[in-house]
Length: 185
Image 1 (cartoon, rainbow, N blue to C red):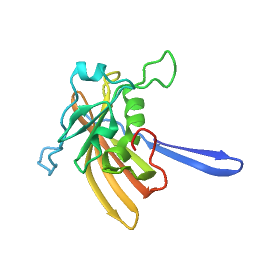
Image 2: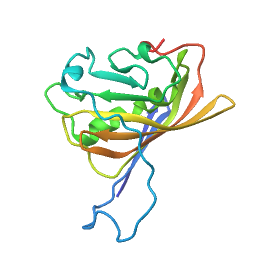
Image 3: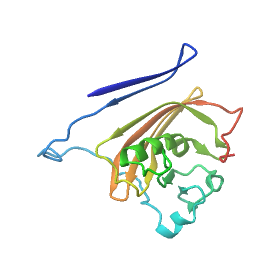
Image 4: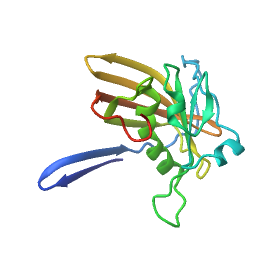
């Protein structure tokens, strides 16, 4: 099933989204072997570190480890982010799908947070999931690929929960060196 949605403001299209739902099959994998890369996921942070995060978000880079401040990770290391569940509605815990969709926007942070902050803005984000993440536990985003040229970046990150990798988020981002997003400068 495919669902498409468009947001129109004053007669102009300002956002577009589409979702493709596939039904699960009985077998989790075919009988043969296929290639799959080793995913560089540091794993989720410990519960005590998660509870120390003021805004429910933690950042990771190889030299620094897990901290609550994005500015601690202004370096050229591979990045990861752990996002505790954000409530879309006041008294409702987000589903695993909602948590992954919210966290997928962090692909820009994991692929573009460098020594001068985040100098790129998302032009497009695509989320691909192979299973629904566990609800309520948080979602991790780990940079896996980044290609840059002429002020444009194509980047991808693995999306994971406490049980492992659940999918991929990709972005196309545009150089925006006039303003670094708040909290990353």
